[in-house]
Amino acid sequence: MDYQKISELIDSFAHRGVTLWLEEGKLKFRATSGALSAIDKECLKANKADIIAFLEKKDEDEKDSFPLSPIQKSYLVGRDPIYDLGGINTHYYMELELDESLDVERLQNAWNEVIVHDDALRLVISSAGTQRVLETAPSYSIEIVELESPEQRLEKRKEWSHHIYPLNQWPFFTMRVSRVPNTKDVLHFDFDCMIMDAWSAKIALSQMFKFYRHENVQWVDYSFKDYCTDLVAYEKQQDYSQAEAFWKSKVNELVCEPDLPYAKPLSEIHNHRFSRISGELSIEEFALFQQRCREYRTTPAAVISTAYLKALLGFSKNDSLTINSTLFNRLPLHKNINSVVGDFTNIAFITLSKKCKNFLECVQSVQKDMWQLVRFHTFDGTKILKFKEGLSPMRAQMPIVITCVLENGQKSNSEMPKGLHQIYALSKTPQVVLDYQVTNFDGKLSVNWDYAEPAFTPNTLKQMFAANVGLLKRLLTEKWEEVL
Image (cartoon, rainbow, N blue to C red):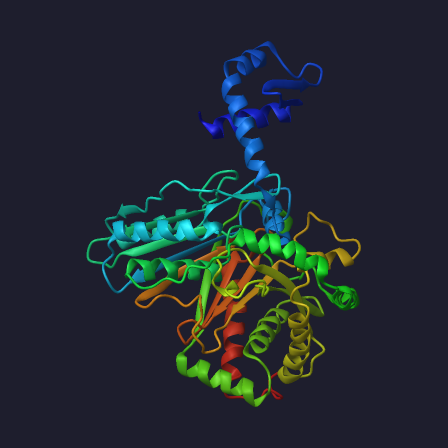
């Protein structure tokens, strides 16, 4: 039976006012007047056995399903093109190069072992807003793609970096290896962020390469589903009155629709592509940057966020600007929670006004807000905008994002395996026009803007990005109280 075909058939009947269900194992239907033609009745008769089998399996699956998290629900909603900047999925794509030649069969065995132990990799997401974990998943095959030139690999990047995974089907990830004569093998890995965040992806890759290299892997006896179940009980025990009071007092300061020099209205952008523009601070520059942060008694994350806000404010018509800050929010519900693969994303908001006299005053304001974000990090950030009246749910609210993942110098569970180098990555998110991805996994500060292509002219985008990187470099040598 072709489950996808039967699913689409049932959906087509539903759109025309025909409801199908099972009653004591028998197929029943209810239809509005004139909705069911003679041809439709013949179609139902011809596919009756498959429809019954499909509905029985669906009922069985629903018994084991559990709700999506708030951020997963927002990702699901963003797939609908009726929303500004909608019609796409939340997706992460990366290319990894190894110092050694790849034994793909051995890598495939290792990846299947990871799938067995990490239940997030066996998730199936439904359009109804639920998810379930496959008890066992089919053996996954890593495709080897033979290419003739590096240019062909770049063409494949365009295709693979924007894949949209259909709902109700496994898997929500793809792993493949491309080979070009006289070059190193490249591992291409992409996934829908509804099943895991970028931090979790690095954990899964680390597990895979440890197994691949016959190293000891510490599998966790705690699953993402366990976490989701425990989280429900945890949430019921929490008192969020202070967090709600804080955000209600701040919500009217938030600039939900920043007025940047867009190439076209965001309401006209759907089913679009993303691109990336990149820069960096060298290992030496980032070490100096951290030293300056200590001198001014602030955190690197606060300084980076402030520099982002300051650069964008220089191009905005608004008196202040708000960014959506992504938080990796693993609550301590298990001793090994930092090794669990899944989606642990939460959001909060940071606002900066043009009224600040200098950069030091700006960063002190942002740092003050970020301490509150840390204090209330367990509060569901998707609820914050509900405190603000008059917002249109169809508009792209808070379309500017910062995802700041900084290591603190200690070995992390998400550390990239030795000999594995990320040579490219790209994220795309519905209802987002610009996502600042900043990391320091290799000792350098990697600065990347993932942006909706139709939203900016190339020249405008380059000017804004140059202003951001230029400001970061000025902070290395100039007095912050004199930087305007």
